[in-house]
Length: 156
Image 1: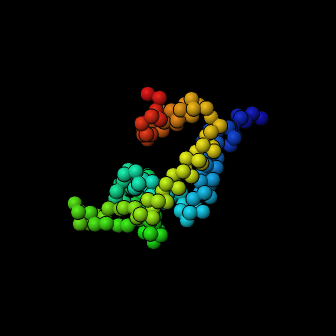
Image 2: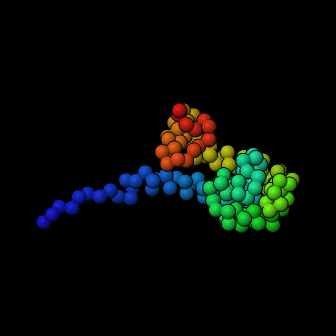
Image 3: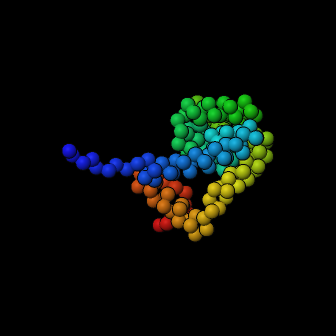
């Protein structure tokens, strides 16, 4: 009788534990945002617009790394909530620019505080040096798959 080789189990895979951690962080933040009528996906749009990381639906799709159809649906919901407006793009009649309303500008201050608190709640278990190391390791793994992280995350 041939002996079976031992196979790795679910709990042996780093990806499984990274997904578990990501799910915990995401769900906690989602609960906090829900009290303000915003989802994590909508927060991604709001903060990207607020910080100037994107101004058009296409730029948003690229920055957040989601398809343009998903961006359109997110923007439609944010427009309906009175948080985003579509403006004509003076450089291209076929395109629109997205802008935050005054209401969104005030809300972002609160939501940004929630995002920071959520990060502290989960990653506050690490020292500052350990947190920098974690970011550098994440950056290295992503870079190996041609995904860039923000300046300051890399150990290079």
